[in-house]
Structures are given as structure tokens and as C-alpha cells.
Length: 168
Length: 102
Image: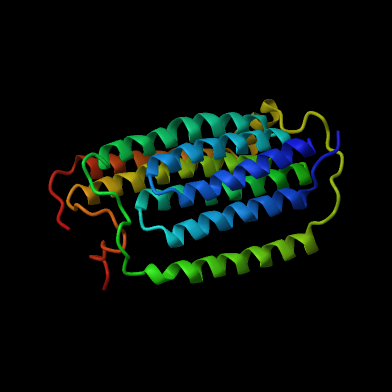
């Protein structure tokens, strides 16, 4: 389990850096697929079976295909982006510095507050049946609200995509 | 089978979140920025799942499920906005899209 965790952590960090470092958006998407797969394995080590499946099906299957469609739609015959210096090109150094400070702060807090060892959990924790009963009894209101959020998203996307004339 | 303690998962999730945040701040391609946002969603999901196992409470995993759904809706809407903007502009630099500036 620990070996699996370290392998997945390594893959997650490397592919995460590859997502934000590669020039071509397609390369970023490929790195992101590997990243999501490693995260699904980490969900399995956390005994979250249903979430691992959802991670593969929804994220790697649906959202990234959406990204690929948009990339294929937008990058035909266009110039590669980020060629020259942008208006805010100086933002890279402060952004990385702020990220390093935030990471150090979070790691310090994690070490202080949550450094207790792993305890035993019951073997059937995280099974799909427990997940389903929790989702459809205790958290059924959030479930219904999520359905409404998806409906609003569909209506909004269709409204934006179907409009012919937009001024910018 | 020994388990990894909660702090390991939290440290990994925070590293992933910071990578996504830096990518969002540094990059100027809106597609890459959206992928950085997905990285940050996933870091939060990992922390939720780790806490769920640590406290033996399924509510954390329910949260992850809802976050995944909202992330799908967000990706769809954001990509629709990106397509709509790019239909009328040749360049794809977010620094150039400043029409909403007051």
C-alpha cells in the first residue's frame, strides 16, 4: 500500500507539472489523463471504489474528451498561443514564490495538526452499497440540487453555443 | 497491510493544489488554465477522500461525488465561453481579452 502510494504520488506530481509546463494543449490533456488515472488508484487505496470508477468515467472519459473536442476545434490553422510576452509576463515569479510560501504553510499545518498514525477501519467501509445508501438517504437533497445544477449548465451551454451574433 | 497516514495524503493534495494554482496564475492559454483548475478540483477531492477514510464517514466521499459533478458542469460552461470568445478573435491570449475591465 505504501509503495503504491509513493508510485502514485510521483506520477501525480510529474504529470501535474507536465500539464502546466507543456506548450501544446494536447500534451497537457494527455498528461492530465495519466494524472486522473493515478488519482483513481489513490482513491482505491483510500477504499473509495465508486469514486475511482467515477474518476475514470467522468473525468478521463467525459471532461477530457470535451477538452479534446475544443482543442481540435480551436487550434486548426491558428497561431500557437503564448508566443510573445503578455501584458502580465512579470507575474510568473511572484506566482511561483506565492505558491512555494503557500505550500510551506500548508505542509507545516498538516504536520502539526494531522500527524497521527493511520488507524484501523472497518473492512466494508467505502463499498458501493454504503456509498449509495449514504447518497440517497442522508445526502439526497444535495443529490437533487446537483441534478438541478447540471440542468442549469446544460441550458446555459446550449444558450451560449446556439447564439449566432456576439459582439466583442 | 499498513496504511499511509492521513498527513501523507494531505501533503500530496496540497502539492497538487499548489501546482494547479501556479499553472493558473502563470499560463495565458485559457485551455491550460482550465486544466489547472481541474488539477485544483482533484487536489480537493483527494483531501476529502483521505478525511473520509480517516474519520470513517461516507460524507466525504459524497462530497467528492458532488464536486466531480460540479466540475463537469463548470468545464462545459467554461469551454462554451472559450469557444464563444474565440469565434470572434484570432488570438487566444487571456491577457488580451479585457473588454470587461471597468
